[in-house]
Amino acid sequence: MSVLMVNDSADFNSLKELLDVTDGNLASHAAALEKEGFIHIKKEFVGKKTLTTYSATKTGIKAFEAHLDALEKLIRKMD
Image: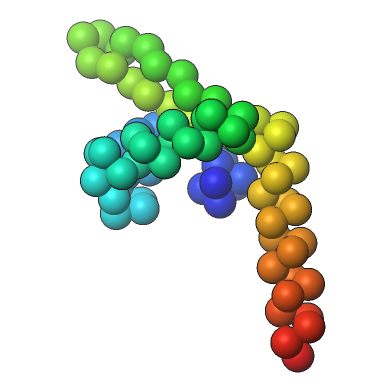
């Protein structure tokens, strides 16, 4: 989600490389985020190859911002 918060979208291979995860791991986490409505997955063909891109939804952005707020509150309590 953090990658999608600072980019309009990211493709499968870029995310896989950046996050250093396996195909299956990325696919299963992306499916879980899509099921919650946090990301949109777009699959298309470019020439003869598939291109899968991911983007954060408004719901996902709001949930991620709430998560960051909660982390900040937790950190402040620990100070």
